[in-house]
Amino acid sequence: MLISDKLNILGESARYDVSCSSSGSTGRDSGSFGSAAVSGICHSWTEDGRCVSLLKVLMTNHCEYDCLYCINRRSNDHVRAIFEPEELADLTISFYRRNMIEGLFLSSAVWRSPDQTMERMIRTLELLRDHHGFGGYIHAKAIPGASSTLIHRMGMLADRVSINVEQATTAGLKLLAPDKSVHSLAQPMLQLRDGRQEYKELMPRSQVKKQVFMPAGQSTQIIIGASSENDKQILRMSQKLYDDYQLKRVYYSAYIPINSNPLLPSIWSAPPLLREHRLYQADWLLRFYKFKSDELVSDANPELDLELDPKCAWALQHLDFFPVDINRADYQTLLRVPGIGTISARRIMAARRSHSLRPENLSGIGIVLKRASWFITCQGKYVAPFYPEASKLRFLLSDKAGRKRQDVRQISLEELQYHDTAN
Image (tube, rainbow, N blue to C red; front, side, top):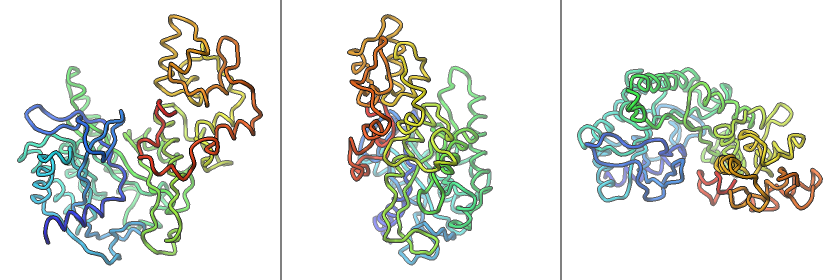
């Protein structure tokens, strides 16, 4: 089979894995070539909004597992292919030298066994790092069940390593991915967490930013809508991953009905794209706004509100918390106000050191007044033109008063998140 044919097959097979952000890496030693910090073709987004191009491909789509939701599952009848490590390493370098990519996102189905699959992936990374001297960004997907030695070696070679948990509950994993287990997923994630911390502690304080073991951390992916898991279960799992496993990111992938099975949603049903969008917004609140999952979803309301972003939904449920005095509130209180993000909150804190803020100063600081004005006072005055009833306020904050829901998917996954220019 021609390498071009393999690339077509294995590039297409990798399309359903969304967890390929390149944030958090600053490149390797100065004696190598390649950079993870230069912007280029729009394939992936860093945390600060830069665009980074990645070759996103599978080592192979031959799989021993039969996960019901996966296009590469054992029981599916479609063309299979496998890269030799030398082929994939040479292909990556060729693309890089032609300025088509800046890094590699390498995943794989389980070929023969987890260890044999990992050995081929690691051989590819070794060729890139040691033979070609490539210092650019590499994100590799570890195979659950592989030996701890191979997991550690991958952590030394890749900037980011990720293991997809796929389902937020043990029951969901057992139902849809019977070949996987919670232990096989959790053990390598703990090993990667501990390994990164160990190397960080060994580094001299002057070189603390030059992490040599998995410098961009680890991430994971949760499939949304393939099973009956609700948003509360998903967000609780995400918070546990952030708190206990120190993950850099949790990605949410709306289930695409590509397989037919009685245990899966109908192949004719639409993927829950708006639900995915709300989960990304809620995830941003967990990571940067100090919200807890139980504040956003509860036993009484286990699903996120599809008409409101999670921060506005929380505000409507806690109107007794408002209005907030913009000249007196502390930083964490400001972050609870819809329309105020991390950057604008810091600007408010800085500006207040020299003078009292007036209503006309607020938009210049970056506050989105069409949301924030309903929840703040400034110099003793309510900022909004009137104080609406809760039902009217809900409409004013909902998607019905702004962007149409069907336009949500036209924006990239990173743009769908909270950030200060569109908060």
